[in-house]
Length: 233
Image (cartoon, rainbow, N blue to C red; front, side, top):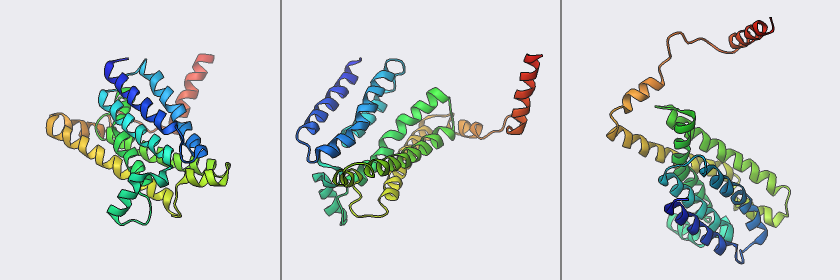
């Protein structure tokens, strides 16, 4: 592990240890940290075979730090959230909304890097697919919240949801993540537009339909069946 990555891991481990000491609602802390128990080992394991940029790991670590701070207090009772509440004149603690916003803001870039390096997407699709995945992950998380909250102790479930009485909380959280992702992807696009001479050509090429392109669907099925019959014969 490189020195910088070791520092990131050390900072995260220190904050996580602090958050694990006498959390305000221990049952909610455990529910929130199931994601940590899954994704941190996953990130460390994949890093042995597929290294992301220092920028991507920094952004991922920043988001994870915000999450574990929320797990210590619960998202609805983080002190900084009350500061934001007063600043914006809101009727609720705003930390929950901030973290969902930062989910899109901080993770859109690492997702884009993965798409570009693994799926080899370029041009418009290198912005569209990370945007879509942020929205998909946000929706999936809201579904997970619902399923978990419906099956655990009601007090822990309410703390885990952090809806604070807002019937549109899930939709607003998803919207916040989408706005964060749009900001990041626009910034990345502007940097490439300013410094990458191939930016415009890549955008146009990504929308170009290759000569000889054919529809899929039933045609693809017929092609596969034809190839299979030839192998059988």
